[in-house]
Structures are given as structure tokens and as C-alpha cells.
Length: 179
Image (tube, rainbow, N blue to C red):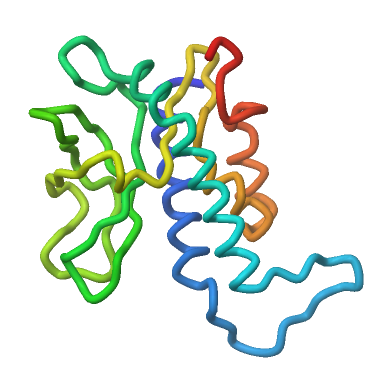
């Protein structure tokens, strides 16, 4: 898969994740579910996301060791998902890419549009520390996306075609075997 296609797929991933997050509690009418369809409640989703974030943070050190070069600059096609506080009424989770380590803190560019603030927008610089990190991903030499723990959890809530496209680029496991 070429870099242009990866960029398009990444855009699709961000769009899908933001759509699911924005519409998590919205419904036009009564839900129609089959007998075998799983019932996903807001609490179940929140618990699954929390577990995914904890798993991502467990491997954050290895991700940073692999991703950051000797100058503290992240490799191409890597991103970090952080929680932003203090810019709006609520905390918000956003993707940051590219990013780097500067003077003991991380800096980067917002990769998606925050919904709870008028002061920060996609493309704006942000500074953050490791405690704010909720997820991460990078594309390996095999062309597969590693990490992306929260996206993996949300696959079951996406449209089948979207989930299939994202699954095609996700690695079989979030962490490379050589870690």
C-alpha cells in the first residue's frame, strides 16, 4: 500500500472514530437489533475504551523508543492520541501527528478538529506530557498499522464496509513481535 493510500485510510479511520464518538449516544428512533446482535451500552463502551487505553499506555515506552529518533522526532506515519484539558468545557481526546520530544515535554500538531473548544483547531500546535497519552499508532515496514487500541475496540460499532477497510490495514496484534 503506497503512502498516499495510507494517508487516505488514516483519514477514513479518523473520520470513522470521530463519527462513532460523536454519535455514541444519539439515536433517531428505537434501535432495531437481531437476537444475535450484541447490545453495546455506553458503560460497556466506556469500559472497553478504558481497558484499551490502559493497554496502549502499557506499551507507550516501547512505542516511544521505537518511534522517536535520536533528535526526539517521531518517524513518519506515527501518531499519539492525547486527552486535552483546559481548552473547553470538557476534556477531549484528539490525535496528534507529527510529534516530537522537546525539553522533557512532547509537542505536536493536532491531527483532528477538537469539538469542545473554539481556541484549538486541526493543524494547531500542542504541548503535552506522557500522562495525557491515551493511544498511539504507527505503520510498520510491513505496511500494517500497529497500536490503535481504541480503534480496534470501536470496529464493532462501525459500518461493516468501514470496519473491513480499517481491519485490512490493522496488524493482527497491536504490538510488533520484535518488541
